[in-house]
Image (cartoon, rainbow, N blue to C red; front, side):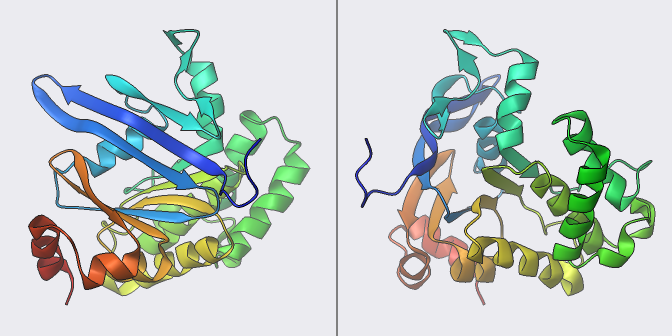
Length: 256
């Protein structure tokens, strides 16, 4: 039984390695994410951040190591790789918001949000619609329920994607650079929703280059370089006094 003063671990990565041919992208990556916290993963391009995120819910299969979600091992069962249906059950619990939205173009905003609750979780359509409308209201899009993605701005599309991820009631939300493809003027509307979720205690793992978000909303910052986590600290500590020269160089470039 876990001691009362110890936080519940939502996600744990143990010694994750990932190779693409001869290129080793992840090198023995280990970290934990307590439930109800926001962890931001920072680092230069090519450091392995997005690959790490995809390995957490087995969109990419790690070559070594293991991932645990609330103590249950993801991706492997009885020593063998899980079947796709079993993996999907874990992905429902650990939903991802992608850089390029990945909305279904033939469905309205509401249709995108209710698709998985109805067809994956088996919820009644009436319940899914009611919940979907509430989620679109939550992300500031109550007036966009019946419009199609091609009529939405990038920020609106990403907010629909967040509502879609929330619709399956995940335990953890993974964000893969959710603002990197947005115009600077509309980045704030997506970050505002993410800050709200963080303040409400949603467990989030966020790959981002938005330094102000990481500083203000994160409970912990992981800094990656060369496929490894080279620093792990509280945001105030990381931004005020990074321990490695590589992190100092990175902050000089991204923090103004």
